[in-house]
Length: 216
Image 1 (cartoon, rainbow, N blue to C red):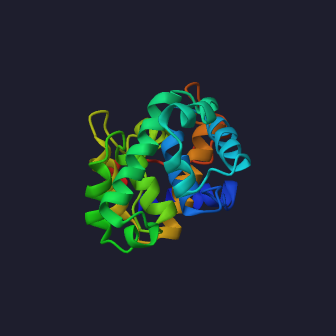
Image 2: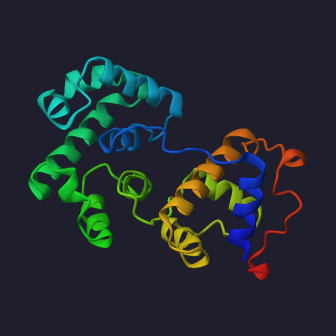
């Protein structure tokens, strides 16, 4: 199985990634929203700022108006849009689950995924990050690094959409949240360190593995 072979190569090369780097489910959810279109270190700065001001709680974030929240997450970029998205999520949480993350994560994952996708500003990658990292549901997260790496190795095609790419992983791997967590983190690490826009192919741990759909 090509997906397992790739995973083993990446794990042997990089080791465990201990991802998502956050302590609470709310912190993961906020981080998943803030990380859209920005580098993780910018998100960390914003999250630290929210913690420092003791507002990284459901009630703390709910009490802040959009403008004040935007000011506190400025480092994450597109801060006005992202503040609205956080507020949209909180509105959804109260309207659908009485403001309780416990209730939300007791929901059937397929229903919760559809519900979260209906929240304005939450796309598949953000929603699946919430489901996997905060909810511990076995849902594979596909991001720009996944597309870049697997496209370069002909495992996916340029026209493949999020759902098609995700389906390949979900059908090729055991449904295990910890495995999906580690695999996605390893893909991110490879994308950041070697499989950049200008790749360092000679150093790549996958350079000697023939990635082609015919090998599946």
